[in-house]
Image (cartoon, rainbow, N blue to C red; front, side, top):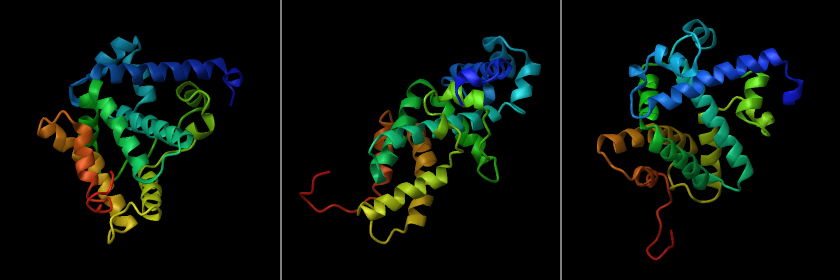
Length: 218
């Protein structure tokens, strides 16, 4: 839907919600999301607490919203670039590393939040106004609900087709390991104070990659 055709009232609502979302991301930095107060978020966004809870039932819903936006952007990028298999996975992990440079507490907070859930949270639905503001020029993909498991499955199927997946490792097992790597390698890098987070991810990805013969180029 073109921005010009979206009612002004809906655009204003979407801008207010995004102001709260962006204020949350700006404030978190190295802090844990637990330490971040709704009052702090509202003060930075210049929005009342009543309004905050109209958009987010609880503070942690902002983390789920972040997952929705982050995953959608990765889908958009991969749709525009000829990356598949392991290259596509490394692109996604590289974006985690980029995010960690300015907001290291964000991924840690997400890991902590997910550890308390009994299942992966459902992605929130976005209004046409939110989609237009968040993903200008990519509204069609922005409207589709992203799914990390499906994305990992697609990329591991490609890796298997391209001979990148280690023999004996099924696509299903590879997807399960990818979830472990996605969250666990980040936590490992943090606990060991390793500044080369991409190196930590690559080390873990070797579990999935085809064993190369000596002399083969990486």
